[in-house]
Image (cartoon, helix red, strand yellow):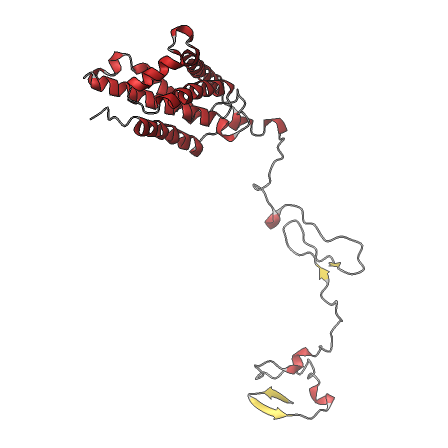
Length: 284
């Protein structure tokens, strides 16, 4: 085995005395700069495994006092606690306790005033109009055409498969009105109502085009359907509100991406129905 002193390597025997640490008074060789195996040997005044287990006292200014420290072994006293003050002060950072009312949690974000009441009124009005016009087509109530008259009107407007569209349009119109009043599956019902209205506006525009009165389309009384289509589109974007069977669903309180999707779907479906079953171009 070897030891490094003063930059030279020397050999030693296995004699334990050769590995004794030099006396502390004599000190270690000044030239010793590398790790020495003797570093693992205890000093002559080593107090045992617990020679550094005392924690000093600190005064209010954060300075160590002359009072004997607390020992970690065989000491009944707990670890010292320094009261706020001096360098240990946390002034300005203490949090004041606040009382939290469980019932008020989330109330601020859900507070909508009379908005839900206004949406309910809009739903009732649109739903009642759709149900009324649907009953006119289905049973001829209030001077309506009935199923046969409605089928003849569709044929005159140039729709193919008028016999099938008669039942689909009439049933869809009544179903959309009922769902809007109940506030049930509102995005689907409003999208269906919007599709019906878009197809109807295109049919009226085609009729005005054939009569060479497209420029007077809105002043000929067709603004009613345009306004109703805008009202349904607004209902798609706002959602049904709280007063309905959809009140517990996300689209009732915070409509966002799904509402835009329902709006595009409804308008696109109305245009697609016109193109597939009629095909006329009212703006040509």
